[in-house]
Image (cartoon, rainbow, N blue to C red; front, side, top):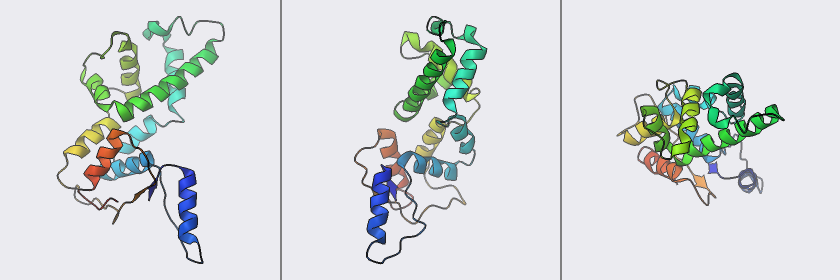
Length: 193
C-alpha cells in the first residue's frame, strides 16, 4: 500500500490491526520509494543511479566537486568566496541537491536532453548541466530518467520480473505528473487501485 505520509501509514496500520485483527509485515512505502523499487525490479542496474543520487549523499558529492574544482564553475565563484567559504559551499550544495531532485521528478526530459548534449533551456543554466553530467559520471550511466523513458515504452514486463499481485495507492492527494503516469503504465501490467 503506497501512502503519502508516515501519519497515513500509521493510521492505516492501526485501522487494519484494530479490533483484534492482525496486520503484520505490512509495507507502506512512499510513492518515490515504491517507484524506485519497481524501477529496480524492471531494470536491475537502476540501483547504481539510486545510490549515486541518494538524498543523504548528493549534497556531500556536490560540495566535494565544488571544493576540488571551483575553476570548473566560475559562475559560482563570487558566491563561494570568503568569508565562510565552507558554510556557503555546504548550503549551496544542499540547495543544488534539492533542485536536481526536483528536476528528476518534474523535468526528467530536460535532464535527458542535457545527457544527449543539448544546450540548457535558459542561458545561465550551463553550469547546472555541467555539474549534473559530472554527478552522473558521464552519458553512459543508466539514470532514473532513462529508466522512466524505457519503462514507458514497455509493451510487457521483461521475462522473470515478478510484480505484486496488486498495488494500492492510499490517501495520496497529489502526485507529480511523472509518478501519476508511472502508476498508469504499471496498471497495464498489474492491478493498481
